[in-house]
Length: 160
Image (cartoon, rainbow, N blue to C red; front, side, top):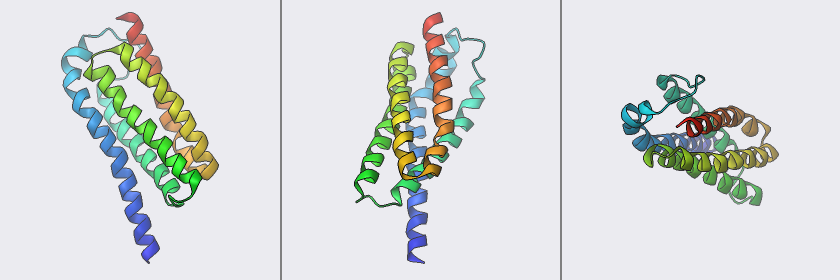
């Protein structure tokens, strides 16, 4: 029973950590939407604003589940320790994108950060796959959404 309780705590902590990244990013994103973001010219493939929050909540949930599957293998395992570090770097880059794009109101800074984020997500997926196929698969929707977001960011940069 003790192992199940420990796993449950790790699962909840993993999900909360990832969701908190979204909350931190929203502090700079939300105030910029009605004025600055609304004033930007956007490509035709821009989704409605209401779609972003539920998509990110779902993606952060999947990321938390993937994080848990790696963490539960033991932080003393060198490959796990490395995977957790890489995951942390990409999570920080995820938050930094909000600060670059919305906080600085800079599609250029956002594009630079999202390119670095995209690379780190790929690296994270590779190292997660080596430790858990399921953990790697859980991150596929994330890289797909960030790929779409990077194209959207690039288009906003190009037309503004």
